[in-house]
Image (cartoon, rainbow, N blue to C red; front, side):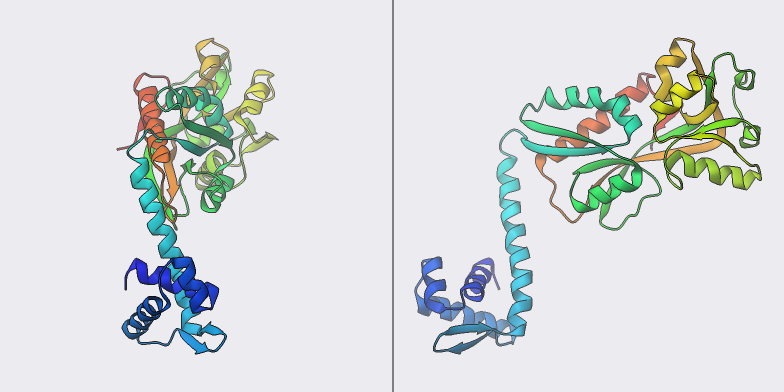
Length: 308
């Protein structure tokens, strides 16, 4: 069995007529008939019922048609990808980021990608981990920065960094005048909780509180770190999040972030395994890794360390 035989088979299975299929393939009818006969002999099945009006595919042919179309598309994609490697990366690449990461890294990533790869059309899509993983599976984004745990089916992941969760409040808050805090120190602290229930920071925080047998005092629940930041500055409460999300306020002396012992989240870069990766996507993935690594090494990502 070879790709030529599969192309002949697909033409006949879709046209259901030897004359029409041969004309589409620019071959003679005997040549087409011979290749179909060889394919049937190799597979040991009858693929077509021949009659005066043409050829009707059998059940076995219907199954082979589905698989053949996939193989031919994949072979064509391999050809396109190999040819693309001979020129500069180009085309659309969609990257999924959480709202906090998009705010923190969006400008850096855009400039770092477009400077060396001006023909790449970058699209930054914001969402929380569950929706980003769904978008990755459905092909709405090409790559995504996710937080473990991640559903690993059909997803290829590479670790990026480990980030510590901190208690964040105004710089003069007496509860933050220490270098580290324990989970049990959060008991009774009025909290502005961020993110989705059972996801990301919120999942880790509430699971740790349950293990420590303390009850968290929910003052307000919000989705994004930016809204939580504004509420904290307004004196509504404290929040548990990443220090990098408020680093400008920390540097200006408005806020303080104290690490909470044992509370970490692990970030990964992920792509779908069931779709070929374009050269442009591969280049963007490497740029993402480079930007994050340089950001952490330069000290611009507080309370974070590179994976591995």
